[in-house]
Structures are given as structure tokens and as C-alpha cells.
Amino acid sequence: MANEPTMATSDKTAREIFEDVWANPARAKFGFGEKIAIVNVDPQKGYTRPDLFPKTAYITDPKQMDFVNEISGLARAKGLPVVWTHVAYMDNAADAGVWGTRTDTPDSLQNIKYGSERHEFDDRLTIDETVDAVYTKRMPSAFFETPLASFLTWHKVDTVVITGGSTSGCIRATAVDALSHGYRAIVPIECVADKHESYHFANLTDLQLKYADVVKVQDVIDQIAAYSG
Image (cartoon, rainbow, N blue to C red; front, side, top):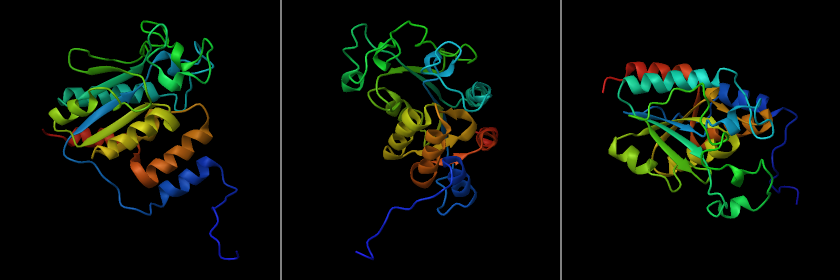
């Protein structure tokens, strides 16, 4: 049929499409609310150290860990909640569910074991377990079967700043769940990463259009600086 709607196509790269969308916003921002929490999703060696785990780790912004440390430290100093998640499974992977059925190699997801090097947080990170919340998760979203939602409710948080990886996987899933739980989701560009720039920028585009505000990390720094409790 001549008038049948068709899917839009483009010769632009995913990066170029994102840059166009980001520079020309068509919708209002969700904006920052009254109180933020930093939720750092899976910045563990299996995903952040390509020198150790080249098949599973990735780097997008080389200063990602520095920026994550900076905003987490600034938030902590203001008494704002800081959360860290990482992924691990039982020795027999019985808790990996259907997600652990597609492959079974030493690099497979379900073979990230408790206490393994792949499970460890990146050594460059500063985590204060006396005040920061640290959760193990088994599925993409940081909200799924973790105490995150109740933790944020207790702290009267209305805005979640999401860092980590991957942009197309656990960041996206966490942002969608944040929105679904009624939180404003903020994704600082310099603080998220993926295996390939196509996945990274395509999902940043989708997040910006639908589920989150994609911002520069400086916007988060400024917001924390202005917070007075």
C-alpha cells in the first residue's frame, strides 16, 4: 500500500544520530529532583579491565573510573546515597536462570563466580562500605531482586544517577526500571561504557528519547555541589 508507514532509515552512524538527537532535544527533560543517589552498575573487573578480560571488558571513556569516583565521592561527602552493584553466581550457576543457558565457556556470564577476579570491583574505584550500599545482582537491572528500591525509598531519593556498564544492557535496564519505579533517571555520558560504539550510542539515543536524561558529568557535579540537604 502506498501510504503504509515505514521504518525510518539513515546513512548516519549511531554516534552521529545520538549527537543530532542530543543537540536538538524534542522533549522536555525529566530534570533533577530534590535528592539524588549515585547507582554504579557493575564496575567490576570482568567488565572494566580489557587488559585482564579482553572478551568481556570494554572502555568507552578512558576517564570513566575517575568520573565515577568523583561523583560518588562528592555525593558521599554531602550525605547522599551511593550504591554499587556487581554480578556473581553460585558455583553451579543454578541462580543464573535462563540468562545462563546460551553459552557455557570460561567467559560466559554465569561463570562469574563469587570471590573471583571477574567479580571484584575495579581497583581504581573508591568504595566506602561503611556508608555505601553494595549489592550482588544476577539480572540486568540493579533493581531486580536487590534491596535498591527500598533503600532509595528510605533515603527519600527521587533522582537516580546511573553509571557503569554496559550501556546497552544493565545501564538501559536499570534506567527503564528507575523510570518504572517513579524515579528521574540521569545517565552521565562519560560514566557509561559498552563493547562497541554502535551499541553504546544507539542506546544513549533511546535512553535520551524515552527513559532518561543523558547529560555531561559536569551537570551531575554541579547538581551535587548545589545540594544543601
